[in-house]
Image 1: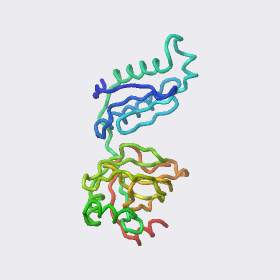
Image 2 (image 1 turned 60 degrees about the vertical axis):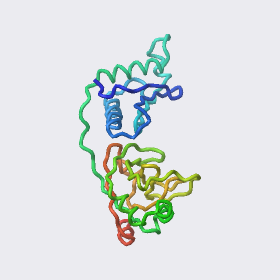
Image 3 (image 1 turned 180 degrees about the horizontal axis):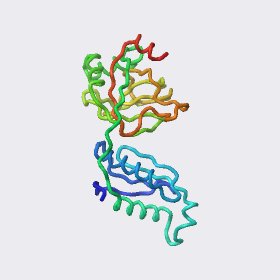
Image 4 (image 1 turned 90 degrees about the vertical axis):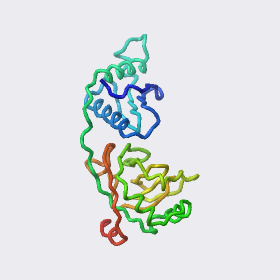
Length: 237
C-alpha cells in the first residue's frame, strides 16, 4: 500500500499525466515521488515515453497513438493511464528509500565569482562571511533536476539568507552557485537566470560526454565546502 494517501492525478496536455502530492518542499513526499519514479522505470507500461520527477509530483509522458490501438474506444488515453496508475499505486509494495549518495562540492565564494554576495549582505544586514558560512554549513538534498540539463534544485536553504528571485534574468556562467527562495542550485551551463550568485564550483555539473552526464541525481545529498581562488584554478585544470 502506498504510504501517502493524499494525491491527485490530472492530465498535462494530451500526452502526459501528473501525479501530484501537493505544492510543498517535503523530504518524505519527495521520497515517495522518487520511489514511484524508480518503480515505473522498472515496470513501464505500454506506450510510456518518459518520466519526470519533481519536488512533489511525477509526470508520465505517453504515446496516445500507441495506446489508442490497445484500449477501449469508450475511454480516453488519459482515463486509461489514470486507471492504471491508481492500480499500480495501490498494489505496489513500498520499501524504505536506499541510503543517499553524498556528494561534496567545492565552492569559491570570492567576490570575483560571487557577484551578488555584497548586495545580499546589504539587504540582509549580514556580514558576507556569515552568508558564506550559512550556505556551506547546511547539508542539502537534491529534490529534482530541471530547468537546464543537470541543474540541481537543492533544499533547504537557511531562512536567514533566503532571497526572492531577481525581477529580470541575467546571464549566468556555468558552475555558478546561486540561491532563490529557500533553495540553492548550480548552473551547469551558461544561461540566463534569476537566482542570486554567491559563488562558483570548478566541477562540471553536466557533461554530455560522460556515461552519466549529470553529476547529481534526485535524492542525492550535497555538502558544499569553501575553496580559495588558487584552489579553484587548480581544480579547473
